Length: 398
Ligand code: ARG
Image (cartoon, rainbow, N blue to C red; front, side, top):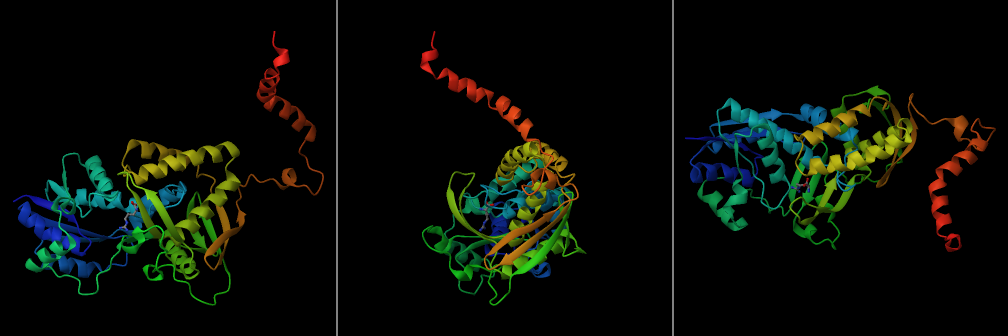
């Protein structure tokens, strides 16, 4: 019997997938479940998989690697797809794929499997990541193949003694990790309708909070402390998610262009991601000179697109990453953030590498900036426009 390694969330789809792979493909199933900060009980999920008769159930806490190898590189790029979505789901897929490949190799399996549908981006991300790391492995996507309606799936589950959640069915599809929570489906599929309050978990406003300030320190583009206290990036992300979340900060309502061409409406709860990206770019605004700032934005947009498209292990992503790493050498300093209901702003920024020069910038006193030099500079800088304008005067012809 061939073996297949399945990315197992513990939910209904991937539980059904275990039996379906056994029956349809006649394969032994090994499951892999990882904790990326989605508040999962790994022991429970392991037990659930074992009860469904899997060959082996692997569970791993990969929060540290997720932050160090995926979130921080993306933060250095201020990565936001379509200027809006911090890529929380997209960043997790290549890491899960990496461990699917690892487990497949260790167990001499020729197949890996995931529970993605045929309409989304995640299938693309898994398939490409697996093939980039191990071109010899084959990917099976049961949900993409089986064409069950919801009722048929539940019927199949009952027939195969797969526990079906007894609670009223949650109409939403939710994906969660340290960098954010993605919610789609149900009533959200009508872009005219306001998202109901009960979909939100991380950004519930706590009443009667006074405005609050927080100081975030960065070293070479990496967050290293909060309010003067040295802290690990994981702890910083968790703390900001909690604190900003209580102010209702971090909600995003996005009509998103999927790679497969469909437009979708996705709601995100991403407090820490939004705060950290804004804080990080605030330090960059002090230490990067004009041309580097402008050029980096172009790279950031391309980089975000590439992550969204599932090309994490692609040489282009790696090349862009090298550029981004180089730009982080002076991204050291601190930022003061103010939280108020539904909103946050950067109210102070400092870096020892700041290029902001008070003496050059001030209007208040005699400055060393040379106004005479400005006149000559403008003449030469404006020469193309001047020459063009002169030619538009028809009387100059012949
Ligand atoms: N639209 C996001 C992406 O493609 C999130 C996808 C998963 N969302 C979900 N609600 N299950 O990265």
